Length: 191
Image (tube, rainbow, N blue to C red; front, side):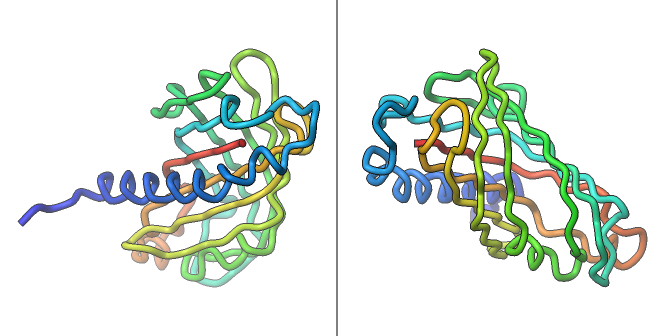
């Protein structure tokens, strides 16, 4: 019998999410991109993997409460991943507040619109508005998928999907000291 490590399960979930993202965004990318935009078709597809870290203040506890979340995304080699397309990597940092708890993690994620600016290594940037986010628990993991549109910078008008996969939160920590940080794997597609 083969045993799969937690990192292996996360990698498998990211791979599945990545295939779903390419299937979802790929066929519509050219039609959804306005003429004159920086992204004209598959030749300019941006597909980056990396890591994401969320710091919670105050730490997540069992009951929902207003919580400031600082999200740092690292794409490409800086985040332990890679990129295809015109950029070798990039990063983004966002701060927002929402009511959330470690026992009902994810409920608030469906309510907050995310606006993220990715700063690419060559000095360009892409600002993406993610109005739709879904949260699914799958095989001891939390899969957070955001779908949106590039509103400014490289790829204006293109579709984007961001998939973050986190290990399930430790319930014992939730009930005792709280959960102050969560780290996962990230895939960002712009097409």
